[in-house]
Length: 109
Image 1 (cartoon, rainbow, N blue to C red):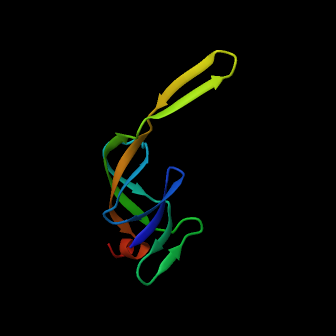
Image 2: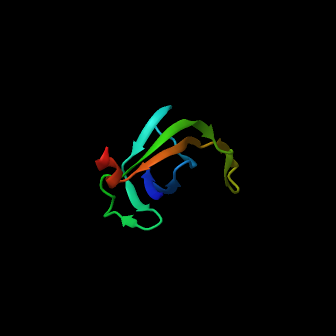
Image 3: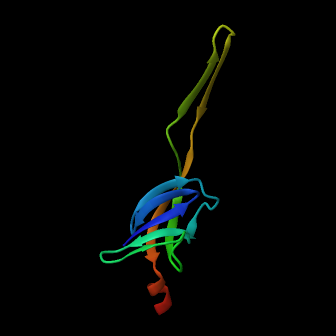
């Protein structure tokens, strides 16, 4: 099963067992559910939400945080002796997708 999920205003294609890095989330550890599922697809069916698929969610486990490579930001203005050098490292949260729940699976439980 495949799903397109909106996490923090970005969209990700996920399936069960995937590991992905997303923008930093407020939670540091534990499990998290994402209700904003845009598309669900398996071998036979494709469900497209308007804008989200009803009663569908993606469950994930937070594995931790990591930093990306350092990006150097260099600013200068010619003939003014203005030079400024800064570094930036973006922090990402690592998620492991544990399961994708559809409306048919949630109604049987």
